[in-house]
Amino acid sequence: MREPTCEEGPLPTSDQHVHSQFSWDAPAGDMEASCRRALELGLRGIVFTEHADFVPEVHHDLRPLDIPAYRAEVERCRAIFPELRILLGVELGEPHRFPAEAAAVLAASQPERVLGSVHCVRYEDGMLDASQLRRLPAEAAPGFMRAYLQEVLLLVQSSQPFEVLAHLDYPRRYWPAGAAALAETDFEAEYRAVLAALARRDGVLEINTTRGIEPARGLCPGPIGVGWWLQEGGRAVSFGSDAHSPEQVASGLKVARDLALGLGLRPEREDSGLWRR
Image 1: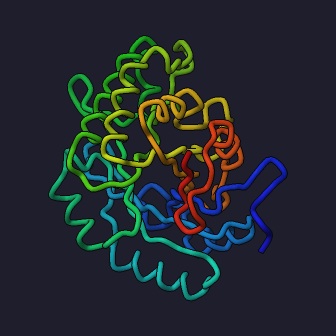
Image 2: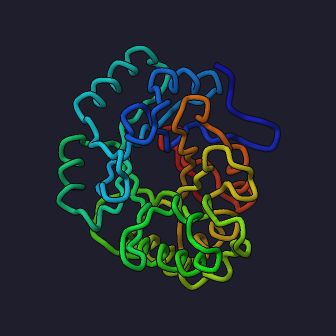
């Protein structure tokens, strides 16, 4: 296994946000192949964070997480790849809106890493996933972004037991082509409110590399958001590709690494996958 370093500094040793066939929106997911890909890239660890979402009126193909099968496959892959640190995790979608459902998933799965995320927002007369933002008129994008960040703030201020806040500005992926470019500074107060609340709960901010999308749009959040995180008292970041297929594992981690190094962040310790300043 090659050392995951380059002359500019160390690469993250683990991809902390990966989906496999157990996530309802990952038809090309394959846990064993993702583990093999991680080793080919020189990673020492991988965290599977399968979706636990609870909004069927938005996600019409939603299916519940098959926890017994998921746990069994993690154990099988641990036996096949003993040199790879494989963690069983879960990505809870809007758990503050579905506390009983989220608690049941956590009790049954006993995850080693819990991501909290917002995908769906109550917008106008119904629920809308940020992936549907492109369907809205371009002029609606700023209002949706504010609604999204307000929902993230509710999540962070809740008592839900997640460790890592995933893809802080998820709508960035789906910003309408006809809208003015997303400028974080237009939403600075909303961003900072979320980040300050996350820092108060001693949470971790994920730098999500967004499945290999070009760096200008790909990091969620980008340099401005991560800079605000540190200013608001945040101490730790994680790195996740949000891969939904094996070939996407570790996509964009070098770009995220360069951002973190530039802000003075360094690896915490070998086994955590977190970086701190």
